[in-house]
Image (cartoon, rainbow, N blue to C red; front, side):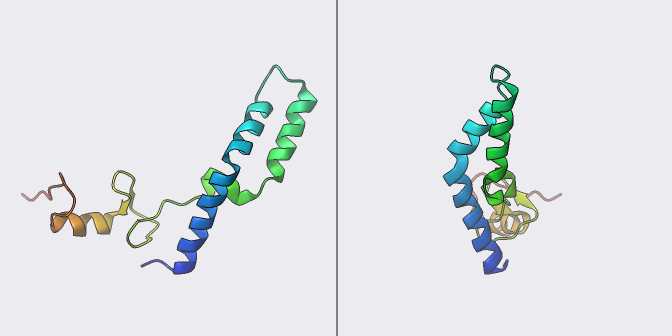
Length: 101
């Protein structure tokens, strides 16, 4: 089980990303628009840099939905490799079959 503080910090980051998503997308579009004058693009980039760092989507870490483990994450299941193996062995993930040979 991951530290509760790390899980909570990641949840706050996810909320901040959602809060600033529209504003960030608008500023990025302005900054990358070649039709705008250079000074307008530069101002948009400055405004983008003034946004909180944790509002960037790359700051969010994928974590296991059960344990909060940050490594070995399967996006398809929203679980870590350990949780996938454990639940798959018990037959609790539909369509997942543990192979053996």
